[in-house]
Length: 301
Ligand code: NCD
Image 1 (cartoon, helix red, strand yellow):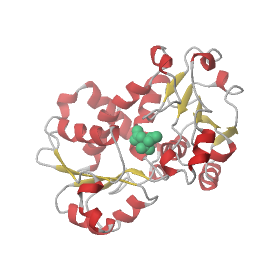
Image 2 (cartoon, helix red, strand yellow; image 1 turned 180 degrees about the vertical axis):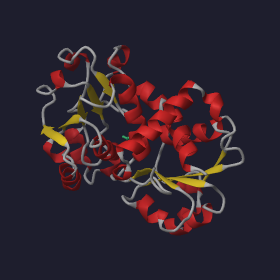
Image 3 (tube, helix red, strand yellow; image 1 turned 30 degrees about the vertical axis):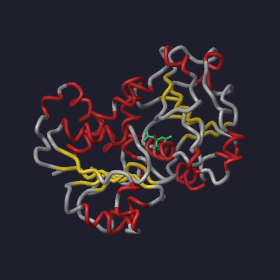
């Protein structure tokens, strides 16, 4: 297992991923076995960006393990508003909590914060950087659905700013999978991520058009265009809605194609898809609880 902090998916070996997913599977099968595991422990929640699933599922996980949370609340109501630095904020809150979960708009924020504290820091999203705990629940869902080797996985949408994509792509290099990246040219994977995937010997192809590759896929991971990270609103409008999954698109999909999405979705997946056997995104979001329970169980002494 990794030491101390969970900062990017790059630090996850195949063994690490399997350890977390196996533990999550055990917890999902028998939640009673970990009742009271975090008795008297507190998890600090520091969310400098909006969150529904990540924050609530960490809170649920901590409470289901018998622990509690201390929540910084919104940036608007915290001393961040008075100009406090992130380094000072985490140094203070480490005195209140046994581990910190941090989401921040700046890439590298969790790594920077980890240099100032001794308690474990879990990166819950750093700008357009990484989101490793999302990746673990994505991999858990993929493994439940189709196993994790010998797969062809399409990853579509905002590959440039999408941190869930960057983390998932890195973590998948541990497995025998073909990764097909589908996006407009302007939202291609960043060069640094492409370089890392190449260095890791990943089997990667890039496409601008989903139709050519759709019939070969086992999993299609759809992502939201990250509007909040677009420097130019016009550029956002030019692209939003272009890469959308609906019943027509699915006419050419394999029968057992699993469609995933980290959520929230905006228009990328039409509501009619929810009723099909392809839809896995709500189950995926629910898997955040056992996976984050497993992480807290493994990371907290
Ligand atoms: C994602 C995120 O915050 O990066 N949400 C999540 O944690 N499930 C995806 C997104 O916001 O598009």
